[in-house]
Length: 158
Image (cartoon, rainbow, N blue to C red; front, side, top):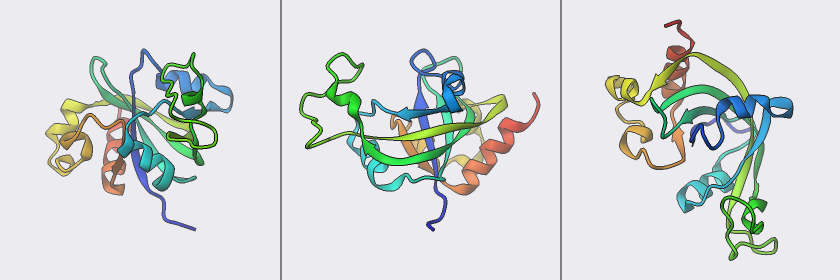
């Protein structure tokens, strides 16, 4: 068995919020629609069942980590790319030659308080986070200590 890895996944709450994930059957859903090659490679090759996820609401007031999830299915072809009516179709991606990949995640913990990007940037122990250095990437690695620190912050009462 491989060691658990830690990730941060971003979604605009108006597109797909943590509440939306919690409202899914079994609180589980595909993490689909990623159309960035660096993030795709992580979804395809690195992210595995059992890995832990910080769920981040981007483009919101404030942008913040709002909870955690667990990966429940390894990377597999993102079939939404083949659907011309989907939000992010890609006619170059096919069933025989898929370009894009996704994983399934399941909601775990809803934070009792948001951990905002502003707060994350103010904490010296988090200054090397990919989120701080390259905030545009929608799927990004985090260290175990970063995951634990943010989870502890999110579990504190306001």
